[in-house]
Structure formats: C-alpha cells, structure tokens
Image (cartoon, rainbow, N blue to C red; front, top):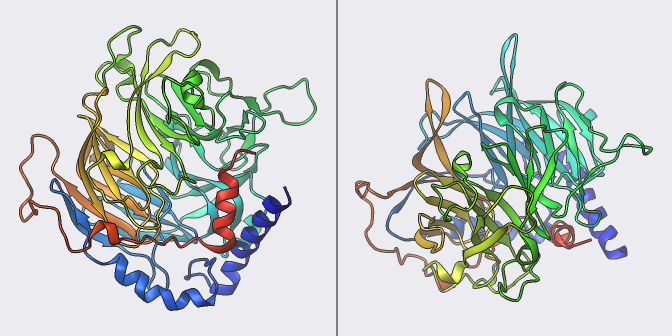
Length: 501
C-alpha cells in the first residue's frame, strides 16, 4: 500500500504543478529534463511512413504541440446535434469542427491538465434556449484548469462537466465528487443526458450513479437511504466502463468480466446477467478470455434481440468486447478483441458466452513492435460489420466481424513511436444531426502523434484514388519502438491504478 500511495502522490504532484510550471499552452510533462533531448528523435520516428495494409490510406494528421506531440491523444467523442468532435489529452480539452471529416478543424481549447479521463463522453440537453452540449470528464488522480483555478482537484473520484455549447469557448460549469472511481464516466442517454454512471471500484464491487438533471449542481445518487452517507450501487463487474445500447440496457465491464443491466429507470439500474466464469478468467474451457480486465463493449442492433436466436450482429445478440492485458509484455498475446453471444436477457445467470477472440498475432501485422505494449483498447463499430480498434503500440487495426464466430483482420496502419488509444468512425451528419450511418473515415487518437485521419475502403467500395495496393515497407514493423509520453511517476501510477485493489 505504501508503494501505491507514493506513486499516486508523485503523479498527482507532477500534474498539479504542470499548468503553473509550463504555462497554459504547454502540455503537462512527467519526464525529467533528459527526455527533452529525445523529443526530436521521437517526433522524427512518429512522422516516418507507416506500415500500412491495403484498404486503408492515411489522409492527414492533427499533431500535438511542437514541444511535445500527442496533445489530443487520450479520448474523444462526437456530438449528436452538431458536427463537433471533443477530445481530451493530458493538458487540454479541444473541440473540432468535423463538417469535413477528412479535415477536422480546431475551433476551441480549454487548458486543463487531467489524469486521465480515458473515455471522453459527450452529452446533450434540450433547453428553452436551444440544445446545450457538454462533455463529461472523469478525474482519476488530479485535474487543474489554469483559467478556472476554483476547479482544481488533487484527490480524484470527481465528475467534471465541460460546456461546449459555444465550441470556441469550452468551459467548466460544474463538478461533483463521487464515492467510487471516476476513471470513466458515461451518460445513459447521450441525446438527453440526465444520468451518468462511473467506472466504479473493483475492490468494493461498487459504482456511482450521478444525477445530472441540474447540470449546474450534479450530485451522486444515494443507493441506500437507510445508511448514513451516500452509498454507491453494487456491481459484480465494477472497475472500468459502462456502454449503453438502444434497447435500454447497459453493459458494465471490469476486472471480473461484463454484466448487463436494465437501465430504463436509470437511477435504479437492475442487474440482468453476466459473462460468468469465462468473463472472470476462471473457466478452463476458455483460457485467456480475461487475463486482466474486460475493457469496454458495444452491442450492435440491440433492438433486434430475440432470446435463443442464432448469434449474429443482425440479431442484436452479439456483444463486442476488448480485453485489455495492460501488463503483458508480449505483443502477441497482450489483450484481445472478442465476440460474446448474449443468449438470454430474462435474468438467467451467466447468459453471455464466448464466441471468438483475436489478438495482435492473429491480425496479419506481425512481427510485433519492439519493447511496446500492444493490448486491444478502445474500439468503434461501423454498421455493416467493421470494427476500428486501437492497439496501443500495435497501431490502428480494422476487424471484420460480419461473422461473429470468425473475426477476421481487414486492414491496419502502424507508425513508429505511436500509442493508439482509440479508433473511431466519423458519423454521417445530415442537417447538422448525427445519423446511425458512418462515413468511411476513421480517427485514430494517439498519445504520441495526436489525431490521425484515415480513409478506409469498406466492403463493396472501390479503392480510393492513389491508394497503395501493397503494404508499405518504409518502416519495418519489427523495428518500431513506440514511446509513451506518460513516463516516470505518472507511468508507475498508471500501472498501479490498473491493478486490482
């Protein structure tokens, strides 16, 4: 416990001091002075040509600041009623206009040093004055907004609401403490965000529900009014992320697998079923399905669900999941992308069962990077059956999940000195409103490079003009040595935070 406290304290001190020491325009640095000499080489390697398959073409890059690449590189989300993309890095919240998906245009910045806000979540609210748009930030350890010092936090477990209704002037409008981890925070309904859930704590098996009906005064909901103090809600799979589907269910992923909940009454969620022993990594019939944590999930076509139907994306009974194995140094096996069959949603226990999984070694982009971690991380689904996923040092991977029992590699792009945390399909907007359709443009959110923009040749489309037919050999994949920007005490704290308490 002493080691854990020291690591957390060191990371908090580094980030809390960053805005004062580095100024508003410079990102927080967790490296010592000697690392400054490495940055030119880092930038050169980060800008070298990628190892890239066919079906994908790099279009452009929105880089970080010259002094330190990667200011956009942790998380992002798209607004529902305006073509806006909101990102979070270690030193700022940024708002991009994505009316032209291939040319995201920066329109607003909020200096904000935060660790870690791994899953930026967008929300909206209809008001008498029009649509209010905002983003939710989850504070793990520390947050400091130099322009709004009253919102500094050095203890974590806090929800922050950032208003982006005026994209050019994002600002913090409120905060709320939580009794459990706010490593991630998610709106139950992004189009009318009045309730949000936190990642929660695996040690206590609990999570927080936040009441956002008054955005100026958000508060945690008390799960048990008969006990003193605010009581969190219990979950068998606490620890990481909530994802909500169109059928009124939420999936909670964490150290002990995934659980599905009925969330039609969002301030009183009801447990429905779980991934059972396989999700906990305890079923010998399914080795390697959870070596560390089930990270996040998505259930396409959830409204089409019928109990007992054959597993397929079209039937709404396939749960897409990434398993993060953050501490595994072997890129070949460090975290997988998975499909699970949701057999029933009638309260039967352990009704979500494994279908298929793939790791980086299965995706045709071997040999693996040298000295990197290559776990599966955040992903996004495109209607029609393609998944875009970030694999840290393993780059941006596109997967074909049209047959949920047989996941296939589709395309990939891997850079030197790169850490892809997320990959997202840009939505199709009509009359300024997001539709259920997706463009063929993917944004890769990279801690080192910033934001990379790709065109993808989706099934049924012809190759884009000028697209290469063969993999580029400009930078042999076996020689890639990705370097994270979060080092020293901050990196140590990241490892400690991800361990089971």
